[in-house]
Length: 165
Image (cartoon, rainbow, N blue to C red; front, side, top):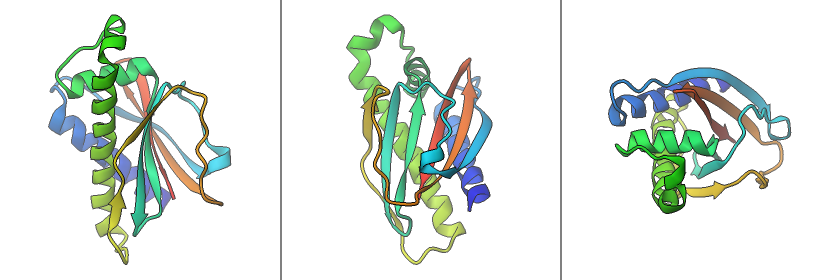
């Protein structure tokens, strides 16, 4: 399932970039990781994470994680704006909403692709996004949670999408 999930994540992000971002905006798939939650690879200095839960046909969820500067760049490109560091305190709600919506769209793409590809018994249901700022948090997963994490590079920044199940 790891290779299928990796391809699904890449396709979902690629679809968003081509549909919502400026034409000159490049997002390139990077390294990927597969394993148990406790072995989770941490190559990105996380500043913000959007979380979407899955239930029904797939029990788990999706995280969209990035450093704050990268999140500002991605949400700026997504919403046709450019966010500067000086805008951060005034724009944090806009960035949070846009970042959560990006995670929601990626999760919808994963849901659509996995639902047909894995021929699940049930549809995958999605929760509304939750956005967490900062680095000092820990997610409590069910026992023996598997993760597939795909990194992406863009305009000097890096972000990652993690599917856990």
